[in-house]
Image: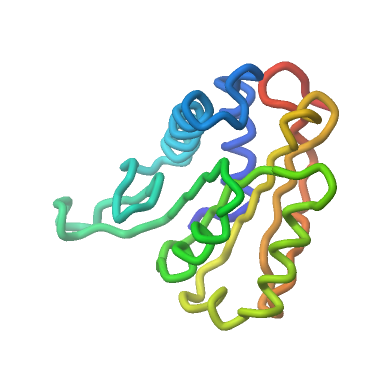
Length: 180
């Protein structure tokens, strides 16, 4: 089973390989980059993938013993959202029984961290977070004006509905041009 740490490492490597400073956080140019990056990360981990399946941006799966379309296991459900309404995507993932649910969102305001918004939500609606008991990986990309100096911040959600920073040896700064 894929862990938040393994997927984050695969995603970081693909962001470094395919990321684009000029496209960052712009719907028309960044969404295709994230689609390519998430697909490549899933394939690196040995999964088959599908884009926009079940209204989910990217899914990763394996076939069961029968090796056909009605015998498969959902390993990853991934949503990436450039807009302020990323909590809608979080809610959608709450009902998906994938081995790992991944939300990728961005710091859209310089004066308030997206993590604070999610922490408030988790305290108000803990029952929604664990509709399906599978783990979470929530990743916040830097604010576009701070892309060169700020880092991507990955989190998991514990069983108390607290946002917990993911322990990583490497932190990703920017998209493809430097690695601290």
